[in-house]
Amino acid sequence: MQLIDGKATAATIKQEIAQEVDRLIAAGARPPHLAAVLVGHDGGSETYVRNKVLACEACHFTSSLIRFEDTVTEAELLDCVSRLNSDPAVDGFIVQLPLPPHISEQKVIEAIDYRKDVDGFHPINVGRMAIGLPCFVSATPQGILELLRRYHIETSGRKCVILGRSNIVGKPMAQLMAQKHLGDATVTVCHSHSLNLVHECRQADIIIAAIGQPAYVTADMVKPGAVVIDVGTTRVPDPSRPSGFRLCGDVDFDTVAPLCSYITPVPGGVGPMTICMLMLNTLAAANHSIYA
Figure 1 (cartoon, one colour):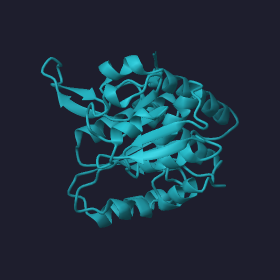
Figure 2 (cartoon, helix red, strand yellow; figure 1 turned 90 degrees about the vertical axis):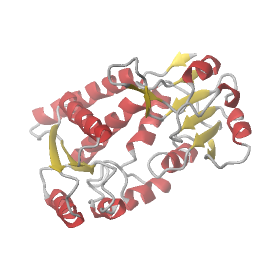
Figure 3 (cartoon, one colour; figure 1 turned 135 degrees about the vertical axis):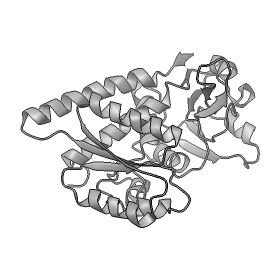
Figure 4 (spheres, helix red, strand yellow; figure 1 turned 60 degrees about the vertical axis):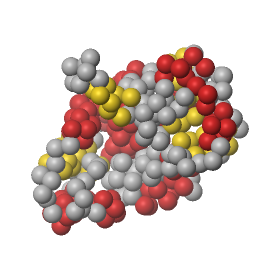
């Protein structure tokens, strides 16, 4: 079994990005600028945005953080999106989800200029991705592809089972893994209501677990030699930790890992790659290498 070290891989990629940014600055360009909009004080969102700011520093980007209380109106938030769309100094920006229930997340996503949509959530980017056109790809699926590529894990012709059908991970992951010049795999999408789910997983050469249930994937679901990618990050109580909780993936790591050829840990697997791919998308936005 080999551990797929997302933390180390992300650090390498951020060094590569920083070197590219230094070359741009030496040639007279300004550093890429990523802005983040944060509504409210959700602990997970706060941590995620803080890590994005740190990643910007590591990549030699400019970063901006725009904060709103969770009482902000939908109109006020949409006005902020409009200002960022028209600001030539901002190359890309994200509106951190989830948003308060009185604000339509879909309306906010659709208001973002797709050329600055470095999260890859806008319907134009999603549609272009689905038919294999250049676009900003959602960061988590893109990060998984990059891990598979950098670890030289063969995907072409392999059977890939994806657990979960979310718009952020499951659906785009399935499309990318099926595309001829990317995953080129035979893809099955399963979820908690799928019949014969254990049987489907046991046929898989690659399992990508993004179902949002801690330790959902158990040893009886994994065939020997499979590659297992764990996207899940759920806080579970742990009184032995100073924080009172620990992060748990969708895979029961201790029982599954001995069966695998490769497996990602939680934390330190897919998570660091997600932020890293956001940096790559922002660099592409600054270079106008996708939407000229």
